[in-house]
Image (cartoon, rainbow, N blue to C red):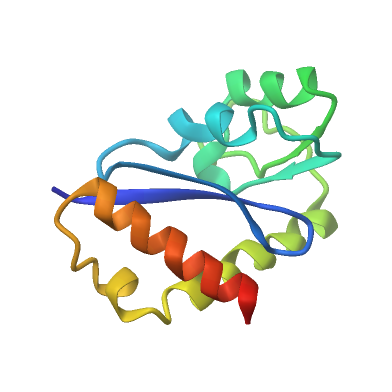
Length: 128
């Protein structure tokens, strides 16, 4: 079974929440779960998280959605392109975690173990 890990990070690039799903699950389905209960001024995500429902949930939480619109939108939403550049913090975190060979090569067969190694690798990133 292929698994996918969805990550929420804070303004410093530190992990706040990790959610594991099956590999075929769309990113946007986990958006609300990633931000639930977190206080943020801005929620920065890639195009995979672009949906009216998620943007409405972000705005209801009192934050600004910084998500570029998908190319197939009839009316593209505006977003802060300069603030979107901060998304590199997420990519940097993912690259640091993937230095752990077990995480990068997905040796673990169960979702539980895969998530556990992501959590362990995240702790190592925080301690470094």
